[in-house]
Image (cartoon, rainbow, N blue to C red; front, side, top):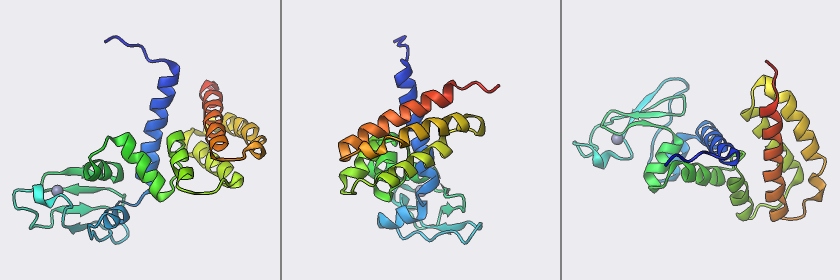
Length: 196
Ligand SMILES: [Zn+2]
């Protein structure tokens, strides 16, 4: 429809993409499948293993064959027809929800800091007390994961400014607001830095 993305939308999209990447990196595919009731064995160090596919019932053979290979890279591949699987794709299929929501739900369940505001709020709404040190740590982890070496100097400088006001946070809604403002500030500072 010829819609032009506003900068805020671009930041949202970029944050969502980074949240999906963080979840795919931090949440164990094997653990998730086990928690969902699929007794999938983990790969032995770097060696992949063959197991039954969680979606075996959709295969021509009804899932009789061990057609699902799980790799040490936290991914899987089903030769019975399901194809490539990572934690977010697995959750997306099992729960029949879009990838952004799947990433958010996984992050909340496994306490992964994705740098996504909705996830931070979801974690806090599950009864975790406001821990200011933990909040700053989570923001630091987000910084390190989200920016290149060049951007990180500026990101860290902005982070220090955000950390200096963390004592003002009293409750979950303060925390959510602080988290959102901090990320926008850091994101803008780091992505506007021109070190080339
Ligand atoms: Zn399959």
